[in-house]
Image (cartoon, rainbow, N blue to C red; front, side, top):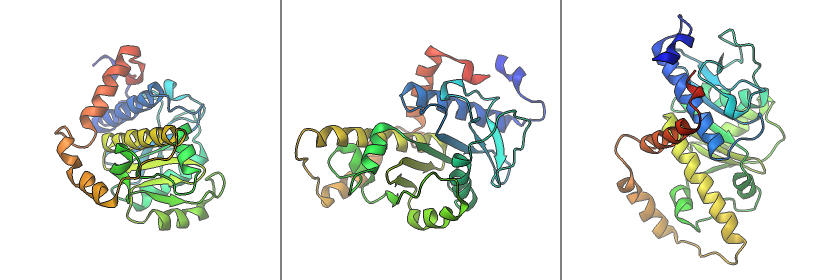
Length: 253
């Protein structure tokens, strides 16, 4: 593979594959309009390395992230490679907390999309008024806004409010999702973002039609029957990467 020449000779094949998957995800997010200047984060555990994960270099736009410029850090914030880029503390503190304490949080995504911030900023948060919202009713945690997430002591409350859930609307702040795989986290974020977009549009039109708890339960029970084999989000994410490749393949480097 031509781009492999840019891989450090000491880097495992598994890490390089993880870097390429994560870099492609940053490009997918940018293509979908989920970039926020040089802010927000998607992190991914480094395969085979306890307590290590990959994060975007602080100062680069999502459209500039590549496999080789991702920064590898440990859960204490120490860089584990020779990257010249810093790491945004506002991203590290929150993501390291979940990577440290949640074995199933392999990938974590946090964004400040307009729709996500809007829904997180109203009483009641996400409401059962559309197809995608029904995917998540009863599965979303909420955490009160305490300012920019740079203080370690906020972690206790974040963990308490998250509980057994793996999706959160940070009030007045935005979307936070976790997945056992990157594609799983991606499809959760995509569907939650769609639910928020549709809620914003619906509430601007009039009184929404609330879906009953009984129907929500049936919807969640049967949802797996509408998924493509291969694991949650796998086919969806691969389709988005193919679209990114039609625009720019530099993320592979």
